[in-house]
Each structure stands twice: as structure tokens, then as C-alpha cells.
Length: 533
Image (spheres, rainbow, N blue to C red):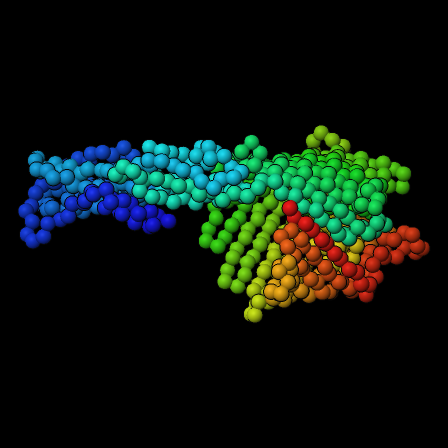
């Protein structure tokens, strides 16, 4: 971009009829250069000017040295981002070793904001002050400011330049491509837990430009449509960008209810059992990216109010947790990597004490520590094939209450089993998918893409401080085939057929002795349909 702007300004200089001095040829007379007197500067610090021309001062200099000083000073302006500035050597008589250099600073005659449908032009101007009319544009600042504006959801700004009406001026055109700030989605699937109805319905709506400040408000709701008492949840989040969209503050609240002890409700990256109220905040700090690498740090604080009734005994819990997560993304010629590491700390504070935690789970404490790790690799293969591998793990040194445990089973975990069919204090889950080339049928314009795949899922879970009647560890694994389909502009379908290879935990207490809800060789179909608006 800077090279193109530099070429454009050279054309502007030629158009306005201004010429630069050139060194004389042949044997040039010598002179003493004791001072360069710079005229017309308003933007470059004096120190930067001196650093540019000082090496050319001294006795026995020639006109060629004056030209070198002019070029060095002009380059200093360009390096500082002032690409519409050029330096000339006016006609003069050198006296007492003083040479005048004339600086011509091209200014923005007019700034136009075009194409904006949902974003106020005044907002773009205020967030990019280097584009102000009458200013000498600093293109380093302009690039940084417009890049920050373009980090806002649904907004992209591209600058273009053209000559102004007056010589030495330019017109800056900021072309905006923005999308509607309102989006919504609707999802219908069969990701259900044990002892509950088969289907789940969820939906959400989001507005990403509140107060013309790129602040985002999102609302979601999910339920079991045939029996909402089995599990429902409503959540809200509010995201505020900070520091030129370099940092974000996210606040959220969750309310979930369930009359079924084994019913799991997935809200974001949390799996909740029973009745819960959660409020929390996250400070999201994207770190400086490097070539083919992005990473960010997230810090959080949550207050959790969890209420469950087991065998007629009410076990309410109120506690605080601190969260810290680091995420890393890498791209290479063969594909991409995603890594994550995080910790969850239960901290003592206003709320319930050790006794309540012990009532919910034997030997559980309100001060606990959990380490979470995850990794993912997408590897491209010849002929359009690809291989996706992922793994995530949780480590804990003590017994945890069920909302903090590692769950396995169902879509996103081990397909072929019920959602969150098994849980442990520690766990490891891995998945491998071989994906066929994406098929885009030309004869059916409504059908956008179809991609079949084969997979293997496995999880190992361990229960800390297991009671004598409990099984201390579980293994779940499955194989299967799947299909991802997109149609039109809004519809998507994910379909998988999975066969369990091992028995699940014996949690079905309706029989004597207890038996697993999923047995080895059982086949289960998972589906997920989604509409995006």
C-alpha cells in the first residue's frame, strides 16, 4: 500500500508542475556546508531532520552532496509515514555555508466516506483522526487506525487517493463495506442426555453495533421442545471493544433449569447440571501477531450459584472461580495448528463453604485447581482430501463437583454415546476425521457443498477419590461416517452414524443390576440442522 501511495504522490507532484533539484554533472565547485535551513516543515521533529542531513555537513562539499541531503530528508518524511511530502532545493546563493531546503507538505483537501449503510461516517472519521481534512496525512497512523476500524464486526474500510482541485492536495476516499449488525440463528438437534426426550431446540440473536461503538449484545435460548422441564437455559452476553479494538471486555449471565439430575445443558464451553445461575466477565487480550501466528490471552472471573436435589437432599452451592486461558494459532504450508492451555481456580469468597461442597460430592472442596489443554491439527492431503485431529484434556488433583468435571459422550466429544454420558475429574478426549473432497454439484444451484467424512473418537476419564462402589475410570470409543451439507445462504446439516465400541458407564439405575445406557456395538445417529439469518 505504501509503495502505491508513494507512486501516486510522485504523479501528484508532476501534475502540480513542481520539480525537484538535480545535481550538476562534470566537475562541481566545492563549498562548505555548515547548515541546512529547512523551510515549511510542520510535522517532522527537529531531531529527525538533523539526523537526516547532519552526515552531509562539512567542508569541501559539492552540489551532489546537497542533492543527497535533499533526498535523505525526503526519505525521512516518507519513513515517518508522510508520503505526501517532498523536498526541493530552491534557487539560491549559498552564503556562509547555509543552504535552504524547501519542504512542501501535501494536505488532505477532502475526506469522503462512501458505501456505509449501517455505520455512521462520523464514527469512522473520529476513529481515524489521521484522515482529517486539512491535515498532512501520516499513512503509518492511517493504516493502523483503519485496520482498527476494520476489526469491528462487519466493517471493512479501504482508502483510495486522487488529486485535489488545488496543486499539492489530495482527496481521500474511504470506501466502506459493512454488513447488517443484526444476526440470528436457529438450531435443532438430537444432542440429549440420559432419561430425557430425544431433541433439543436453540436459537439466538445478536446486535453487533450498539451505540455505533461496535458493542455486541447477544441473547440465546435452548430447551427440550417436547418437555422444557428436562433442561432449558437462557444466556446473555455483552462485549465491549477497548483500545482501538485491541482488547475486549465480555460480560455474560446464564440461567439454566432442569428437573432431571442426569440432564446436561451445554452453554458455551460449560456443561451444567441441575439449576444454575452464573454471572461472569472475561478480559480478552489479542497479543501481537507474527507471520503465520496469532495468539491471545483471556482472563475471567465467575460467580456460580448451583442448586441440585439428589435423593430428596437439596445441595445448593455458591462459589467463585478464576479463569486464565492462552490460545495459539499457527499456519503452515500443509495446514494449521490450534493450541490452548488454561486453568480454573476455585477461590474462597462470599458463598457456601466446605460442608456444602462435601454434601454435593464426597471430599470435594470449594478451593480447587483444574488444568485444561487442547490441540487441533488440520492437514491438507492430495486431491482435496484432508485430515483433522483434535484432543483435549483436563487434570485435577482432587474430587470435583459435577459442574466442574470433564464430560464425554455425544456430538463434539465421543459420538455414538448420549450427551455427557460419562464424567470424571480428569479426562482425555481425542478425535480423528478423514474428510473427502468437498463436492459442489453444478446441476443443483441450491445445494452449495457436500462433504462426507469418516471418524474415530475416544475418551478416557478418571474419578478422583472414587467410592468403593464407584468405577474409578471409563473408556469410551466409537467409529463412524458423517456428512456435512450446506444449502442456500442459511441452511446447514451435520449428520453422523456412529457405532460404540465399548460399554458406557453403568448409570441406568432403572434395572437391577445397573446397566449402561450405551452398550458396545450400539449404533446411534446424530443430526444437527441450523439456519443462519
